[in-house]
Length: 482
Image 1 (cartoon, helix red, strand yellow):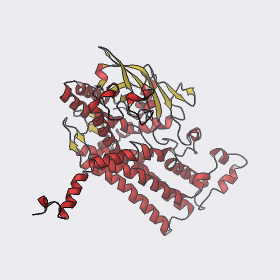
Image 2: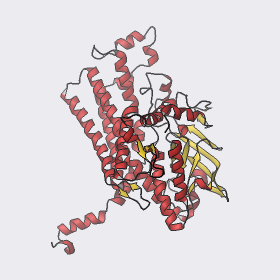
Image 3: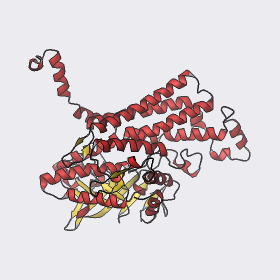
Image 4: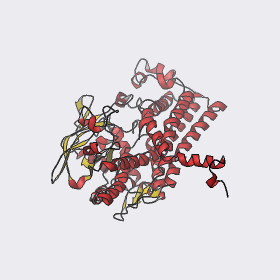
């Protein structure tokens, strides 16, 4: 397994094409916009070598029997699923940010099981190819980005009916050596500092859309691939140390728009090609695995938000007020509620035909829907307690200015025992973690709230609930007698 330094060094060996703010970046690894995200991902590598976290961040491969990073592991028990959630919370407590490896982790697990069932129906050998790809990831400890979300164009039209057929990734050519794909993937978390990207369909498909039923793996620096780094709230703050808040690890996951212009993929790296009837299965499995995560990662991030809020209350001199304590209690309650959901959907996991384990999809979707609400309330309470300084703090340049810096320092103090710089750093951390991009990701990461509602209705077994009610109301005589 790689260390954090080895991971960072490995990125320098790639020829990844990255654009940001209208410029092609010659050194994306050390660029101010991207380096915090690199650092966050590197933390996952270092924690695998830390005895305190080794049991969570590593696993034993069912393919080789070797010790591997859990981020390259295929779940084979409810214990695996629960350890995943605990690992995510522990890493979030270290970084206070997204560390970007979850999407690829969930992608390999979704495709591992789906390819097995495609093979059972069609006699293909996708599962063997997928297992070989997983072995490669486990042996090399490469970081794989899960590439699911397409630009989608007109959401009211299917992929094949779009005015521009490139709004969804599609196969444009096949031959005896492989396939050629074209299109783009949007909102790609951690893509610029990954080694591989795992292309997956983004929606269930019909026969007319079979060219869009494609899953495959390609290097992020393959010829014809380019990445356009996305803007984040307050991203120009990254050029200053204090003002960016979380100076080492940034915020969210360094998303990008990834363009694929006629990329050749050899057959050994193709895991679905035209089997449109399995696209829906793969999407639902991926979505459930990914929604499982949120009580873990957002639970860990919320732990830091709670700590920073409590620290701000002390710095403001209001920590002993009963209403402040009550609001912090509410923040803890909301955090543990979303964490409970992740643990519950993991503990209720079940084996799939290939032998790997799948979460309870109903509880996974409930977990993510709770996150879309609870995180906003946690942040609202944090803003309530922290005060207006959160939104109006002068810049780091003003603090360091030879003439006006003394006024910024003087009038930024709270309690006299706490230096102004400490209060300013804490308020910048809170601003970074509770506003803008971070909140939007809590809402739309792993799918919008409506996506979870659709799955909850589908998995909620409403007819069974109606039957239970009818029995007790003596409307269903078949079950009324003991």
